[in-house]
Image (cartoon, rainbow, N blue to C red; front, side, top):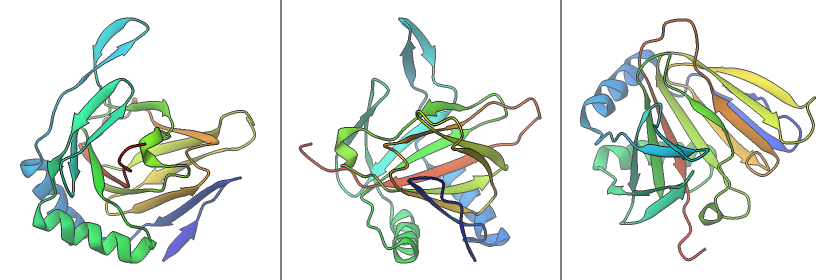
Length: 196
């Protein structure tokens, strides 16, 4: 069942049961053990910090993606990744040529306020976000209108589609928590345009 959680100009659609428990468990174990996870460093106010999560970029061909001062070079999609991507494309009606994987190892790992609005994602980016593992709370807020904000619990096997002007008018985050959390893997499928 699809839930429409849109807010303002941000189109947010959620399929809480995109994968059943068995499927989600299987994908989590597969990606946890096979993805080529990397620890990256970011510069914040002139200081270098370890990014508070592990990441990996996969794509349909050799390409790179730059965000927050980092440039990631893509590994090629595996056949299993292509099958999952195809299922998500069929459901959402959008095509994706890359996927940024995030591994949140525990409650201390996070992703601060940001928008996926890099030029190479095009004028109105669409992001399909698949959650595996521990439930974490996702926050989204308008960049200027403080009344437009909400929180969504992203559960094991759920799929969130962010479309409309969600990346242009809003920011989102996955904050640290005080409650102990097991690992969570997040797949963010997107389309990277060449030459932008």
